[in-house]
Image (cartoon, rainbow, N blue to C red; front, side, top):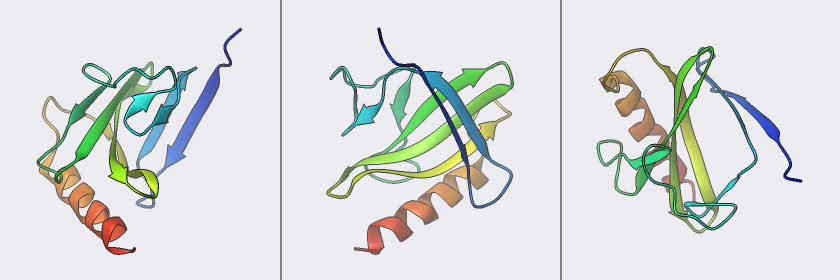
Length: 108
């Protein structure tokens, strides 16, 4: 029997929440079963930065996105989450994601 987990996260900005239910985790850009994450679950976000990707969630409360980076020696860096309210990703979210990714990569 597979284990079902509920994941919930609040970003430092205080108004972004991500909630997801599922039995698969993520490791180095792959699911727990070893499958590569692709559309519609994940997609590249070059506008955020080289190697940045976006996880896509939908539940009864809305649509959510999580920016992550899986090329770090530290593991997967999840650096920005927000509720999506329009068709395209708002420029504010892209800029904030790019800033947070840069900060995390510069921390060494």
